[in-house]
Image (cartoon, rainbow, N blue to C red; front, side, top):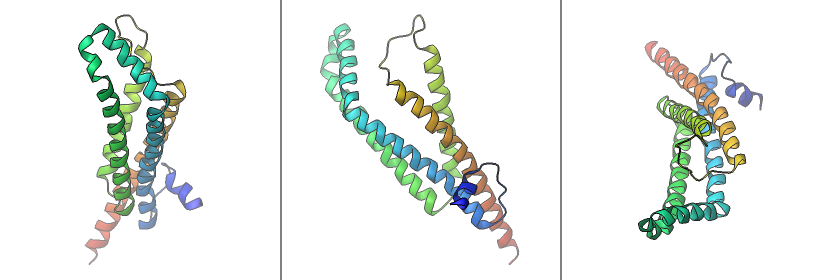
Length: 177
């Protein structure tokens, strides 16, 4: 357990290949954390979120009758896209766990940083004059998402550090032959 805690610490020194692999796998754990949070989101979409989305589409279709026919298709598309993204995340997390590399943590660090910034900007702009009304997720989901993304960002940064050190250690070992 202490090895896992040490591997998740983004300031811990990485000196051995085992420590580098553990640190690189922190990114996989961050991805799996995102998968769990995505499953929570999918469950919400399948239950109470479905009614919220249908109400928003009904409100939009009252202003635009052509949108009324797309209401059911839009709700199902959102649900299946969410499921698909969770599955893709799970696959990439498995790849990062089995073959730690630097590409996956960099991509996910960028995506998580973008999610944090765009989420904060959308909260800051909500209710501003001239901004259209949109479907608002419940506040437990918004703040839970921010907490998950902040933890993920730290873990992906550690994954980048671990993968970089792993590459360096393996390169140095190959040079001694």
